[in-house]
Image 1 (cartoon, rainbow, N blue to C red):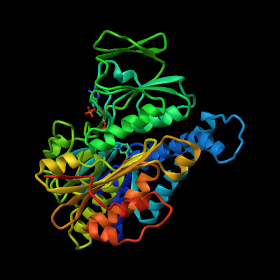
Image 2: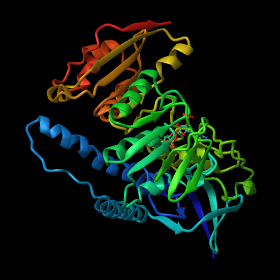
Image 3: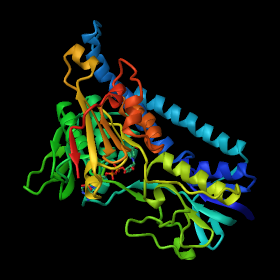
Image 4: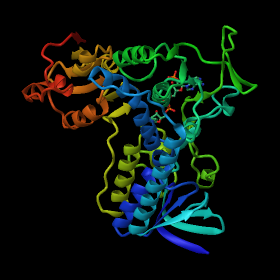
Length: 452
Ligand code: NDP
């Protein structure tokens, strides 16, 4: 059986679904091929279930803090199987919504593994699909070979499907996934040890966030092992043994491999259309999301640029508008806000102070570092830190960085102003909303230092 489409999309994750539906809305005949569950990493095994587990974890802090506000509670007890059942029901519900959205948009869902057989030709099982335009939105998956023996350890995929939590865990890595899962596991009662090769976690983030993130993790009771990753991981008697450089071999019942993700390009048949993935396995694309093959495009994590769901969605819609909507456009990735949902969360938009300094920029640096009202009231130690980086000439706000409660919500709103090119004078003219933490961003009077 043979079918011909204006657009054939490989991967029904956030990016693939967004591109398919937008293209169909422009009148294109569209099919999307999916080998696993509709919704992809974000909905099924990433952002959504992670945040649902983070909500569960945050109750630990809420129960402790409640006493300071006059509440008496019994001994709280977390039952992972109950969370797991509710999570499964929720991801099923969301998957059904995604399926209905595709059907409602007249996008054909083809279930099976796609293999490209040549220009415009994709095989899925016994069907040969023909495409005028092909979009690769096949996402990424955890790296499972970063350290000898790590292939037998859990990744975030498996952790989110657990029904029983271990008593203790080693987390390897110090990026988004490592810090988010270290935080939530610790709040759920797991003793967590974090092993990472850099001196500070969150490589690539502003140094002031990195030092405070490390301090917050430590203050929560997570054991930090900077500059220390296992040479190998051995498996014996239900324990994972970490072989460290100094010959120590601590054992853990559970090891979380959080050492990064790799684009899903293997087995796609890219060689039949002359696409060669780069050294990281990613498909190179230009600003219009074009690959080296004619009429073949790629978006989202498979391009391994800014690996965030909203970026994949924005790219998918831009591509569909360009191909079928008569409105060619590209997505500007130079200013993308992001958040690490550790406890307390980190959120950021714009370059780090070090990056701007290295570029020769002349900057005024504004900071606020305080104990929020809620913490002060109960004698808590958790702090909030905010930083604005402002061009010395012209006063444009180049970046905002924050670690503290509600940081992702606050930075998301600030991102509008910063994307619009707001100046510090406009921040200063904004009347504060009191009492909030966010108001500190419009109450920073004098720079703490000048750079350049
Ligand atoms: P990251 O790239 O954020 O972190 C990978 C970590 O693994 C780093 O700490 C890195 O160390 C470490 N690492 C890599 N290779 C090795 C090795 N051989 N030995 C020891 N350590 C190693 O990847 P994640 O998997 O955490 O997340 C993948 C991407 O997914 C993120 O970059 C982000 O774009 C996205 N994501 C976004 C989330 C959000 O928006 N909240 C949540 C989760 C993921 P080093 O720093 O030293 O290189």
